[in-house]
Length: 297
Image 1 (cartoon, helix red, strand yellow):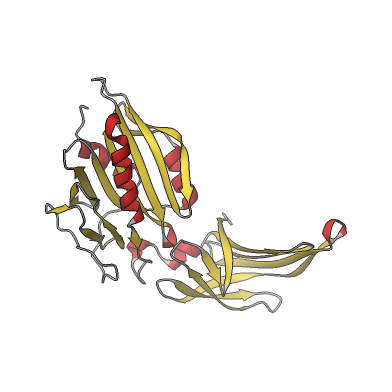
Image 2 (cartoon, rainbow, N blue to C red):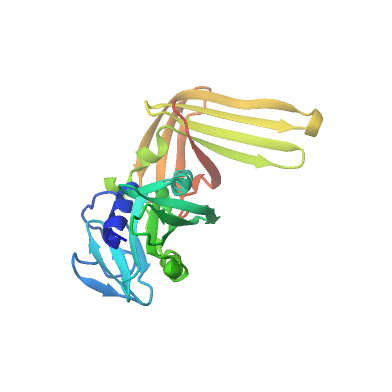
């Protein structure tokens, strides 16, 4: 392979949109905060504080931290990997993993099979094409989507004959991942305003002969709308709109995992609602699970 392992991996970090480093924060995840240029070995737990990302180096591997990316090599220095984090939703991540990715001029990662998903974890295998010396290389990505769609990415490359061992190492890293929720005021992790504006939040409830739907839409310009509707009576039933309101929304206060939002709405629907997000990036209003979707309103 003409390109060095780490050159390819750092190129991949840029493809996934790795953010610039920011000042560290108080850690609630255990691990060593790595220093640039220092070498860390298998079994050690690393905490990338600017991402709120903790993981364990797999046995037989070692690594160094540089510019927001933790680079890894196996003991024989025949395979390489990296661990970093990006702001990306589950849908965007899956779409990106499905794409053919150019890691250098004329060298591509081409997906083999399809993305595999288990809960909030995603994996995918790749063939590396375009090498002029005829060598055969494989790639593998294991990623976990956390709160606020902040996502850990473990990416590995190896000769074809070492693909399974390399993929196992990336899976071990992914299984060891801990992701903190964004800290209040940490713009690097995004903000509640960014998580709310331009989105519709929808609640669904259904039974054998009824279904209910409630939506809150928070537009980027500060306007808002609310609707609640029910359908009952089975096949011969009817749809009724229980309530609708329009007006504006304003973020009152927020913490790492929750935010109070005040809605000024028509039809006596004004009031404060508590939004929250769990460690898997699922959104709630009060105690009810709401599904978030983009709304260019």
